[in-house]
Length: 342
Image 1 (cartoon, rainbow, N blue to C red):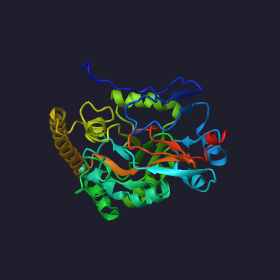
Image 2: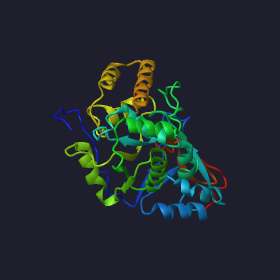
Image 3: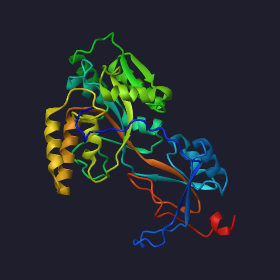
């Protein structure tokens, strides 16, 4: 991305993992109030997500917690006699990255048209089984820096079609909607909204898992034009205290790896102020300003904030966190298999 020695990005998330990782409690830790409440935690890397879900739902003694449960599997967990579903308001968003280099999406009217074309409530109910919240920008309503003055775009097909026509969108040109692996069902719901509201052809392209790393490199390095109009993208934040330090900068800053389009001058100025700021209240005020700018300029297709879902053994008390997976506060009751000698 840059010759600057402080600029870096990770892309290759492939890891060689041992079958199991065992954590043993530090009983001498100073923070006794928080924990530990468990003697040992075993992370199992030798199971597929499907097998792990089967074990937690249909048995005891093998798996107690399964992370990243799909909304499609939520009812299976809720109906299990061995497990219950835990949902957590998380620092994650589902959005569409709009390619502002592709005409006419350099025009804010075209970007607003995309946002006005989508029925977010239907996307959440049909695609995510209700486990998400509609968003006006990048910051969910339960997070620091949320701007309460912003409201999610409401579906308005007539206005969407008018704005797209005024922006000069060619009638015969298909809209290219790309999707990360696993999001194809949601992409098809979006495509239907675009077809119905905008009256355009939509081509849905799902990136194969085998091509994902190469596609990420191509997008981040920006050596060739992005081959999409909208990329359906699931993203998370590692900092619940100052979202713009992570999500906004990666999507909109001139050095942002997932920026699709030219830098935005006003955003550059806001982030420059952000980098020099140490007062938390002022940081969150700037968060609100960045989200306001992103919303008003429709810099992305803002969709929703999905909840994190966990399948948890019925005798386990698990506390979910917004940004990370932690087990320091997790505990088991007397009925748990480990306390019965099973």
